[in-house]
Image: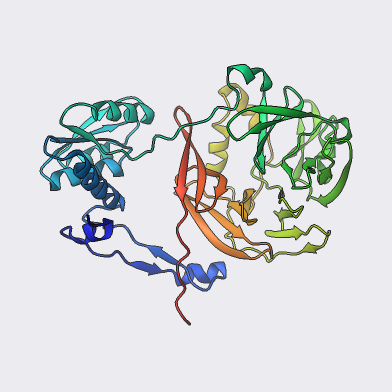
Amino acid sequence: MSGPLEFHRGLEGYAPTPVRVLAGVADDLGLGWVGMKDESSRLGLPAFKILGASWAVERALRESGGGAVHTLVAASAGNHGRAVARAAALRGLRARIFLPERSAPARRAAIEAEGAEVVVGGDYEQAVAAAAAAGLQDGLLEIADVGAHALTPLARAAAAKELRNPSTLFRAGDTLYVGDWGLRRTSRWTLDGRFVGAVPASDAVRGVLPRARDAAARFYLELTPRPGPDGQGNRDSAVVVRASPALDRADTIARLAPLDIAEVMGDAGRRFERRVFSGADQWGALPDGSVWVGRVYDNRVDWRDPTGHWTRGQPLPDRVLEVTRYDRELFLRRFPPELRGTAEQLPFAPVKPPFEAGLTSPTGEVWLEKSRAPADSSRRYHVVDRRGHLTEEIRVPGHGRIIAVAPGAVLVAEPSRDGVRLLRYPLPAAPARPAP
């Protein structure tokens, strides 16, 4: 049996797609080399999906015997469905593609132009279910673009009472920690979803729930200043503290930059409000007790090692993004009409921060989520090592956000009409840099 490379090389019109060298981008980022794989023309289609679809069809027909199959079915939001339709036509088969109602008319037309029957209705999950059901019929074969991954619920019926208002989640070793502001505690769970205990919130840290834990069982949390009746206290700095396993003792290990606060005059008098679109320092802790702080005003990552020594990171390269009128309009649309007048009184920052969020990878690198313009079609991440140096830039298509990093893959939370979809993206291998 030939493998995928030999199979694709045998297809009419196959050719390797080029890698475009982006010298200007490399200069802007301070990197030696940046390349972009150009998949705008792959076997006659403007996306790489035809590679996976054609190989999936080949494998599926081999495994099914192929003789009785007359129609390929698939669920899609666009590119996968068109690729399956093209692969079906190349083999003299029919295709039936299920699309969600929100699919753009141009995408439907492109799939129909490949000779496929298009069925439109429901949301994406319903399209997936419809394709799976159709694929069970005689003569029909499903070519799926999603896996049947199972989810393990934390709170089964017997443990449902152990969760009320979960607000934070982190992992340390083989244990999951869930902060619950409703029960005022941090519960502990095994990786297969069993409740094993809880640490109650402590007055010693003002009831704040931890956000990380090291191998010595010490917790890490952020204490924000007390705002006061008019919000004036928010002009002070927050601190990162390291607490004992029982949360009854804590030491300050890092001080964060004050928030960008503006004075506002309203019907109730003077008050102090954080500027909309302003940034805040980010931080995280590693199992060995190291702590990193992303300095939003300096656009760098500083590291504190387990001995308390600080390493100052290098400034990161970033474009300056002004807060535009369209940014403000998008923000105000989040509010119901009766509250927009109040929202319009909020102060706005003149520019967006260089990054909006940060998380730590299992290998101890920091992933900073960079700010984006409304028209951007992808979200950028800077990967920073323990010296505070930029090592890589990763882009995630669409409007999803990376919420977890694993070796070789990331977990992306993508908003949808019906809630949030969790997507697993494999990470590309770092390209070999050409010799100077």
